[in-house]
Length: 391
Image 1: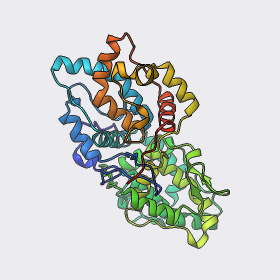
Image 2 (image 1 turned 120 degrees about the vertical axis):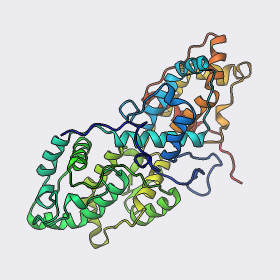
Image 3 (image 1 turned 60 degrees about the vertical axis):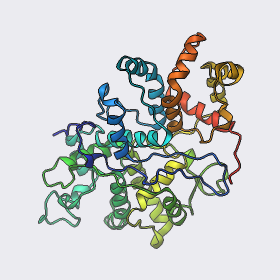
Image 4 (image 1 turned 30 degrees about the horizontal axis):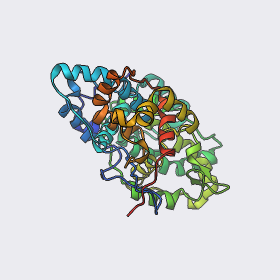
């Protein structure tokens, strides 16, 4: 049977507990660093409260299907939708705003709903469970003579971070057993993982019937990365020879994709690390994912050259450079925060309505962005930032 998606508005709080970080204060890496701060997703519980407090529920339903999957898609959708939203707000005589931290919570909520409502086919998932040899070791109920723990003892299939942690640590035992049996390591696609998790949630014996996203701490995630990952992985242009630059690898669209990447990567890690294969402790995975978010791993880095063309073509340069004083537009090179899908969205909530009024008076059309254009624009804006000296 296929499990129907759960509505984000009717889900209990347990479905949308904190997604990635407890701390709402932003972090900056490495040290020393520019004073521009980096905003990362916050609390999905806070985000769920915001969509009620700010009146979003008066016009919108949140079932995970209509939300953009990537941060850039979310930012583009919010930007493109804004004029229609402001017209509706004007009719209702309301004008809610969001700061960067509140928008970070909203993004976390979108991600959690997208995970919980990720479309999956339980029947296909059962076929995956059997085809990938999972059923050879794991049964649905206690008492069957299988070597692995039965599904009835699994309690994390609705939590992507806990599930990634479980599968990563479990891979060490599986690798040894499959190698001894001459069975190839099962590789998953994101779709296969989504379907399999739908199946695991659907069996009556499953204990997982509600998502519970555990919070992560980015600074602790940095320490986890240095301890368990830095021997092979790094970020950006300063990546030493022989290491893998994670920013050059495709980022997962869904948290399911991150689970898949961790599992598929495990055999190579087993071969390289041997007895030193890192086992993650409680909270390590959620902390690590929070750190990866801060490093832009989960949203695609754009192209600054293309971003400069977007800046011109969408009339950003007209208001923010050529006629900045006449328009009363801010200098985008001196922003206190590094640009990201979150900060772009926050700027729309804070200043967008006034921006639209000014543009209409000057016969400038409200620009529409694709997710790729949004990524390119963000990269371009960050390339022009005048670094503020940290004090």
